[in-house]
Image (cartoon, rainbow, N blue to C red; front, side, top):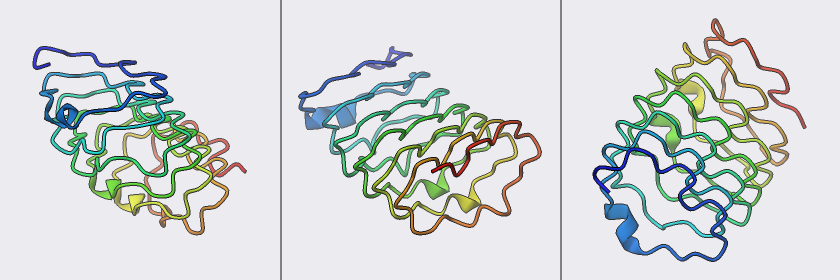
Length: 173
């Protein structure tokens, strides 16, 4: 896998696929696109923490529609320094009860964040994303929309909104 640059849609709609442990050892150091890689999967690899994501630019819709999952593999150590798009990454993960601690992600280059947690109806808490650098965010539309069981949001009152041009429906539902 060391020469692969695009893994978008790779496992999309793999309803009964069982991932082996070896997927964690894949060399994805040249991958730039993970868009929709696990979209609408009912199972996920148990571990993805060894992946070198330093060249990835697109992570949008990565786990979109994984509605039967109650947790996501630990992606807290992923290097997202070059990622510009995390739109809908967890959208429609309606059974998701917890997220890895993604608070330490370097979001300096991220621009698109819309629908990130949209329809995550079972989440009660989010990692402390209040410390994210939002200076380059341009779209946060419906980011927390229909997260109907969230008990508390991180304090995002200090987020920079200077470049954001879309924040409609941010807390819708």
